[in-house]
Length: 257
Image (cartoon, rainbow, N blue to C red; front, side):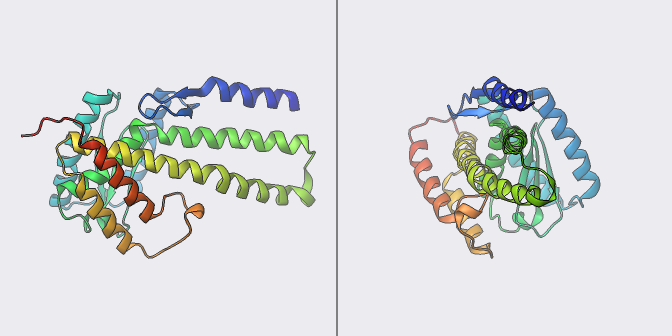
């Protein structure tokens, strides 16, 4: 049984690893694009049933206007087979997120910080980038392999029962969370920042507004925790990286009215 599990883990790892055509990084993805789209649709329906959808006409018009422009660039440049949808959720949370397959949600708490379309384009560009880069599927795949690895190690060390089982679960969980899952999550954020800036730039928005927006996000953030304990980069590191990305964009041509 141990040999079978060991072989399964390595077979899954090597079979599912492929180079991302945009970041040129090896990705572990065990989920097909078709499965990804179905997962996104199911999650979208659940969220729409449970959440309070904003009826604010200004917010909805702004999100759809900016979202449409960003999605058009994504379709032309990267050809994802997605049906892009953009929703506004009535909530004080300062947040936005993307489901696999191109379903994007923006909270009204975040929209209250946004001063113009350019700043919203930084947010939506970032979320669209997550979808294009298939970060959701990669995160799920890493968790799947991690769980298989947990079983394999437990069997190899003959860990079972009430005495050592809970301690092993805790040790393995902490190690994988802070040693694998969190670092990968921060990498995803940097990648989405870079591609998101490119998308907003090609959509003829001002990338400098992304810096202004993140400074406001930094001021609005109440929790200051060390970066290695977070799924996201620190605000300072993120802003510094965005500034470097913007300098590179100057060399890229775009057709703006």
